[in-house]
Image (cartoon, rainbow, N blue to C red):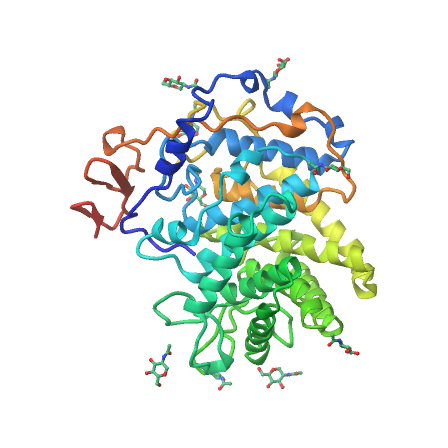
Length: 478
Ligand SMILES: *[C@@H]1O[C@H](CO)[C@@H](O)[C@H](O)[C@H]1NC(C)=O
Ligand SMILES: *[C@@H]1O[C@H](CO)[C@@H](O)[C@H](O)[C@H]1NC(C)=O
Ligand SMILES: *[C@@H]1O[C@H](CO)[C@@H](O)[C@H](O)[C@H]1NC(C)=O
Ligand SMILES: *[C@@H]1O[C@H](CO)[C@@H](O)[C@H](O)[C@H]1NC(C)=O
Ligand SMILES: *[C@@H]1O[C@H](CO)[C@@H](O)[C@H](O)[C@H]1NC(C)=O
Ligand SMILES: *[C@@H]1O[C@H](CO)[C@@H](O)[C@H](O)[C@H]1NC(C)=O
Ligand SMILES: *[C@@H]1O[C@H](CO)[C@@H](O)[C@H](O)[C@H]1NC(C)=O
Ligand SMILES: *[C@@H]1O[C@H](CO)[C@@H](O)[C@H](O)[C@H]1NC(C)=O
Ligand SMILES: *[C@@H]1O[C@H](CO)[C@@H](O)[C@H](O)[C@H]1NC(C)=O
């Protein structure tokens, strides 16, 4: 969740820069420059799978328009340009890994493989400290990347699986309520003021996935405790099957059933935890109830609508995509285990996803070649100097208002969740992976901040954009 940066101590982009100084990528010019979106993404390379093509184009535009950023570090942990929060830089990695997996390609693989950081560098990149759910996104993405890249890409003491487990252990050690009030649960952040659903459902999913991947038995009691907390506090409504956002102090749910990512994360958690806890008979039907409830209650004309629409903040702009990626995990589970209840629901899920894809493509898309699409470059313009479409706005049902990486990623999650099960990618551009140029950090002299946000510099080396309500004093936004 967004927590405002006061000052980031170390900008990891410089580490990336140091590595790239020894890489062959000294300039942007190489054979990839001759490609454009119509030559890189074609219907035939995906055997006619339209949503795979839409995913390819949406990913291309996301990378071209906002990545690489001219700056390094700051919010742009991956040197992405314009995500509003550290958490989104972590959460988008799972989207990209899923596109590789479902789309049977290795596009932008170096963005994925280059994203690995240890717990320490994640913690120090977000002053004063990331909240537990912030770290959870990196844990989930790293575990998924390990799955997608396959074994052999990891060393036992280094790599995506290793770091995912380190993150899990760090959250467990620092975030679990050791006083076990309300049957425990993870605090939202180090202030220990509240317990939200997000970090608890993430940990249910992450722990269970890690158990599936490692068979480390020491994780199982922690998964049991995590589920007991969610269950005993009735986080999933036993009337509507929507998922509450968090807990009240008296150990009851806060009855805020809005954010769709809670439904998504709970579904993802249940799908992974059910086999580990030997509770498939109880938990898989519950996941289906949450899925059908969301499809019926959080939609308008069959299109998923975020509770806060039309005035969602930058965090909430990515929530719908997180619901959809987890709905896809439930679909995958259903097909793999031929789960009878699930099989009955599959037509509903597939029709729902397809309808959302078609709606977003027709009503929420803007093509800069055809019209004036407003695109926000929060941290300065992209190195490519041009904007390519398709770019997407906030609401699947449109109309297009403006695009930024949050809404583009949200729609990418949507299209990726609809890629057909047996889609194969054929052709040289299935490995399209243009080089990541050496980051060239800006200073406040480059006017990198939005007009209403003061630029704040520290030792003429690092800067951050303060909130519009803040002032910069000696390198700190106060
Ligand atoms: C993409 O490149 C092809 C071949 O070089 C060219 O024919 C086409 O016009 C280009 N399309 C765009 C959108 O630039
Ligand atoms: C694509 O699918 C083929 C056949 O299942 C598989 O051998 C190959 O590894 C896949 N490639 C990628 C990049 O996922
Ligand atoms: C646990 O409870 C004790 C006594 O009530 C209290 O002093 C302490 O702050 C609590 N610790 C946590 C982590 O809540
Ligand atoms: C639903 O949960 C509440 C506790 O939040 C409990 O009092 C009630 O009996 C439950 N209803 C059903 C139908 O299980
Ligand atoms: C918890 O507190 C809320 C109001 O703060 C109240 O509505 C609710 O009934 C309480 N729940 C329990 C289980 O006591
Ligand atoms: C799982 O649960 C079933 C019945 O619900 C039981 O027969 C079986 O022994 C359990 N397996 C394990 C490993 O606990
Ligand atoms: C595009 O639209 C924006 C916002 O409506 C406007 O500020 C800008 O001047 C327009 N640009 C062009 C080239 O028309
Ligand atoms: C983008 O524009 C800048 C300055 O206008 C120029 O130096 C740079 O080479 C351009 N980049 C590309 C990829 O065309
Ligand atoms: C987008 O729509 C909102 C109102 O829903 C409006 O306040 C805002 O100015 C619009 N932004 C752009 C860039 O058009």
